[in-house]
Image (tube, rainbow, N blue to C red):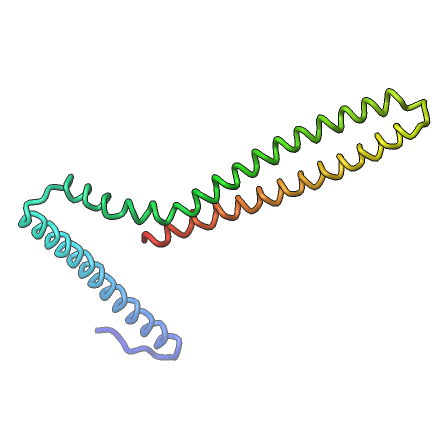
Length: 165
């Protein structure tokens, strides 16, 4: 026969042990209840499908057909945005190339006429500064569009996966 707890710490230890034992017992029961309910549910679904005479291939085909328009509808705005952003980036890249070529040409002209002080050199320097400013603005716009595109791609990628679950 066990002796009763003598002091508060023994009582605390005894109560903790009893609570742990009860929690373990209930946890095991809960696990078995969940497993059995999942098994019964799976059997019910399998029985319902077999009574309808459907094969797994037919079920898969129907699920894909049902979800395909929804997925396409959700992805259409993202795809249109990406196409538009891609076209804008291509246009910006072409403009950047043109501006870089113009700047290189102007620098060569300035270097060729460096020794001569005339209004043409001043005009060329002014044109070169304007072209460099335009290039810098185009580079900044390209960076803004790239970050916007990254944000647009990241946001819908998380939304459809969350919506499907």
